[in-house]
Length: 317
Ligand code: GLU
Image (tube, rainbow, N blue to C red):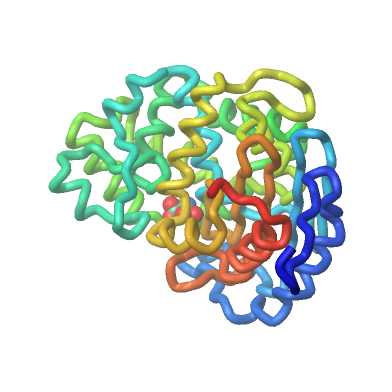
């Protein structure tokens, strides 16, 4: 062994609790550096001092630190769960209505949608998420409730709720999303009424759940489509591979490249400061820190995930 290098632990030997506790200490000074999202007024009140992290391995090991049982607004992380529902129901024909390339634009940009004639670049930017939500609500008169039930089932927690105050707040300030949805409708790429899609979209973004809930809900993506906790098959192996691929290339707004460089795993972030990350074949990890960086991703959350994959010597690369 070259001098100074440490022998790597095998996956079984990793003490996740010690790793998470060390990361919580290491990012303390970063919590105040980010800026809480203010464009959804109800999110502006969340204290920047909050920090949580949770891990759930395919072999059942788990660990958590900080405010890991405190529910927060998952916002765009919800897009992964609705994409799962839409892909299950609609299959690959969904890709005729939405692409799977990074957008290189703001998450709520309208520009690209105009010159690409109403076909959003991917399902994890707002325009694509409206198409995905439309696919769910158009099939199910109770689509909004079906989204919540799906998340509750994945997380094994019936107490997960919509935060009605956040949903109302976003609706009141939701002119960009309304513009996107109307534009999609004008292009024939929304089947349901615009208001119905927006209502379901704002509600799915308002879902409040904890980091511990989030790793349970995302565990099927680490486990080839099978819920780690219940053994239930949620998606096919192929679908989980594809959802992970879309997260890897489109899940971190306009910072997917630097996130892949620094962290190296599929992930989806939200403006509530949450990030769900997946190491396929191994584990799901979630982090929450409300202060955002200039790209809209949790500043301390990205750093925490960078430390995590570095300290456990794991990524997809
Ligand atoms: N509800 C937010 C919006 O549509 C989600 C943004 C996000 O988390 O990316 O603006």
